Amino acid sequence: MAKSYQEINEKIARGEAVVVTAEEVIGIVKERGVKEAAEYVDVVTTATFGPMCSSGAFLNFGHSDPPIRMGEITINGVEAYGGLAAVDTYLGATQPSKDRGIEYGGAHVIHDLIAGKEVHLVAKSQGTDCYPRTELDTWVKLEDLNEAYLFNPRNVYQNYNAAINGSSQRLYTYMGILQPNMGNITYSTAGELSPLLNDPLLKTIGMGTRIFFGGAQGHVSWMGTQFNTACPRDDKGYPQTPGATLALIGNMKEMDPKYIRGAVYEGYGASMFVGVGIPIPILNEEIMAFVAVENKDLYTNVIDYSVPKKAKPTLKKVSYAELRSGSVDINGKSIKTSPLSSLKMAREIAEELNNWIKKGDFFLQEPIQSFPMGNSLKGLEIKEGESR
Image 1 (cartoon, rainbow, N blue to C red):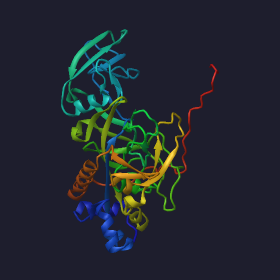
Image 2 (cartoon, rainbow, N blue to C red):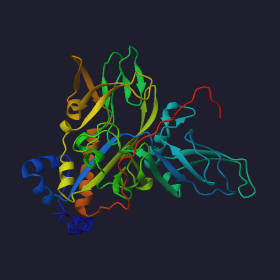
Image 3 (cartoon, rainbow, N blue to C red):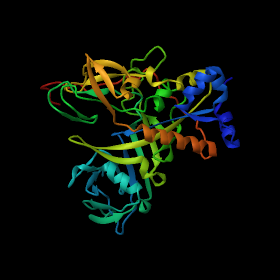
Image 4 (spheres, rainbow, N blue to C red):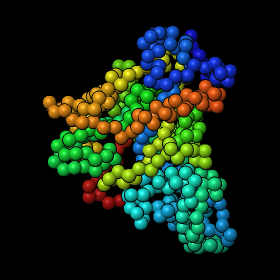
């Protein structure tokens, strides 16, 4: 029997909703079957906690006296974008510090703000009649700002490649350090707990979906950049390569620094670990069948990152169960695997979201607009020797 968002929210309000995590629901479906499980379960919580480089924060500092139109802006030595209105700025998570280099970046500033720390704000301006101040040097906390919200253009990848290095030189990448001669494999996913792998055809996730975002309630604001729903899929609809992404928005003043953390990848730079949880409403049997997916049925490709081209060679197709086992066999060689994302933290987020819903502190939001299927990626074509 089909359910509606309204019916599920009414059950949440009465404290009667059956809410389980994406790992727990696997056993329920095995025991009861898809049809009975779909009638029994109302919401399945999914989650991920991993590096999401395409992230950042919009900040509004309020006006000084006399006021300034901020042009050149640094926060704890990290450059922020000054091409907005007078005291608005966007701080990118991967922007490196001017004095500490890649060891400290925008993600660390964002974490420090959420953690309640003071940050050093320096701004310069040419000065105008309406904004006469030309320099500003002060310290601020998150509570001093008018508005501060994360707006992350590309988070929660639906699937992603596993990385290996076929060269004789060590590689420093956003997938971590890749040892020479196929010495290790890295990957980044929560697998069967991951949000977009539990809703591969985006039946319930779209613009407006309410989510757990950095310890606060946030929303899906739009499709993420590099949104690719035309990617190869198996016969059940699960993506086999990088697929959909989400743009997310949430209030930094409500977030928990435990779920938003700065990170440094040696030889590469800064990134930000972001905690995201998304509830999947069990509207029908089709959605129940999707959320019952297991790591053994979810696949990705081991890609050789030593090839300096966009289209890198695939060495093997592997399941997430194989990657989670700790090693993968390639051409008779057992190669150690390690995740960049934290399954422990993803489980904690899924449980926290589960508790919010059960307590009636979190209600489902039906998407106000669905995202397109069949959307493909475009590349940048560089024409050698041509000047424009």
